[in-house]
Image (cartoon, rainbow, N blue to C red; front, side, top):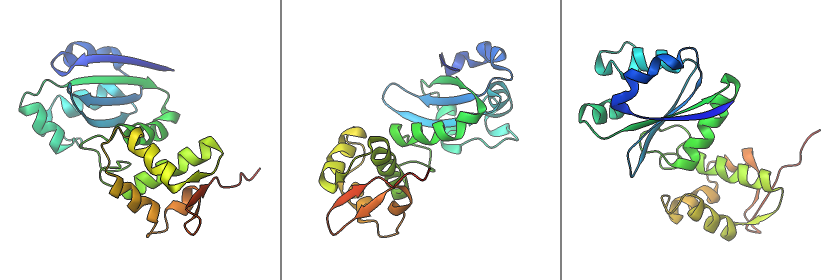
Amino acid sequence: MCKEIKVVFKEVPKNIESLKGVSGLYIFRTKGHIWYIGKADCIRNRFVNGYLKGRDSKQHVHDGLVQRIELGLELSVVFVLMDKELLKKEEARVIGKACTWLNTEHNPRVSVAAIQRQIGLIVQDSQQEWLYEEMKKHLFYYYRGQIATKRIEEALANKNGNLSRYCRALPSQGTLKPKKNIA
């Protein structure tokens, strides 16, 4: 199950009842930016008890997002309906691809580990060897220039050793290889 519903934030109260008991991702965006991506087991409850109450909410709501709501930005929300089992993995994948402004976990703007995770996914999915230079160029275009090549180089330098969690890095050869699948 994967269906998208796009709503201007001001219209959410009129449309939220139909999402009772429905799980999925919610994406706050304006015309030029994707601000935040979250996951919810019940989208209706997340919004009724969270974002529609703003600062009065007992639930955790992202302060930066609440500030933008209070400022009256022309926010829209995209609800991507999906099974609960897919939420965590899809949230990480979408945040990693979209380079959101307010998410911290899984965000390549904030975390070198997120870039390394993406490198590993690309290497594993392709099941081929990559040169560091090829990967650097690929990621620059993948992120639509939103992540500086210096930051990508930092991820490839692998000073914290995280890259090896996702793929085999051979710095002396300047190559990345998929890990052997254990079957």
